[in-house]
Amino acid sequence: MDAKGWCEKLNDGHVIPVLGFGTYAPEEVPKSETLEATKLAIDAGFRHIDSAHLYNNEKEVGQAIRSKIEDGTVKREDIFYTSKLWTTFLRPELVRKALENSLKNLQLDYVDLYIIHSPIAMKPGEELFPEDEHGKLIFDTVDLCATWEAMEKCKDAGLAKSIGVSNFNRRQLEMILNKPGLKYKPVCNQVECHPYLNQRKLLDFCKSKDIVLVAYSALGSQRPKIWVDQSSPVLLEDPVLCAMAKKYQRTPALIALRYQLQRGVVVLAKSYNEKRIKENVQIFEFHLTSEDMKILDGLNRNFRYFQLKIAADHPEYPFADEY
Image 1 (cartoon, rainbow, N blue to C red):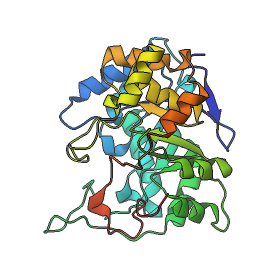
Image 2 (image 1 turned 180 degrees about the vertical axis):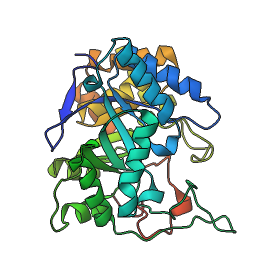
Image 3 (image 1 turned 90 degrees about the horizontal axis):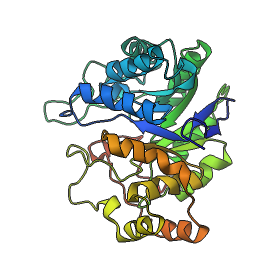
Image 4 (image 1 turned 45 degrees about the vertical axis):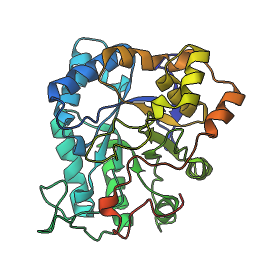
């Protein structure tokens, strides 16, 4: 089984490849690297590409996808592309415009998956992180159910094949699921998930509602200074993970990725390094024993790299709840 063939069925009938290529890179990384890395990923067998308006690289990612279509490596329908609705566009009247803007940057006719990036609504405008004169974020008050209705309209218009959410907790998911007149359930919830934060309760809840959990920061994050405490533990240096990597003759990254796959989680692997991009596709070549899965479960410490503390006083801040 390779990256091209292994998919998870979504609750709307579409399928999502279980291994995705994450394209977020810190600002100091030149956009040309995103373009090259995305091409390398497609050449290596990745068919699921994950980006977002926030990453400010959809032009380059779109260019990479189109160049691989043009050279015959893939057809458009072979690629599963995810974009995200940024939180300054959560007002219902801004949703479609935001998606159309992403499509224009990508030069694509549709995205395979469009997700609400976070439930934390911020003031609409050009600024990604609007701040007041004291440097505090300026929040917005939005009914997420109304945002979801606008997402449903994007699906009906054929601009997005599937729609989902990201960084939602159980309460916020239930609010959408219990919405009167709900037309489409979210197909997924994309959240931080790795052996230090295995999201067991949220995963069980999502499975019970036929919602796929998608893991970001599955390798513990690239530790961008703007988001992540630099003294936080480095997941891929964990002695248990390293010992297991030795046992299977794989990298610690592959062990962490394979762990998610065997739990029924769709996993995003992020690397701009050619050797590692090729290596990450080996996730399909080996299998962890149930004993080793239990050992990895035991690494959980509910540790979150991306805490988004700057938004902790927002009424929809998702990480205050247990899950």
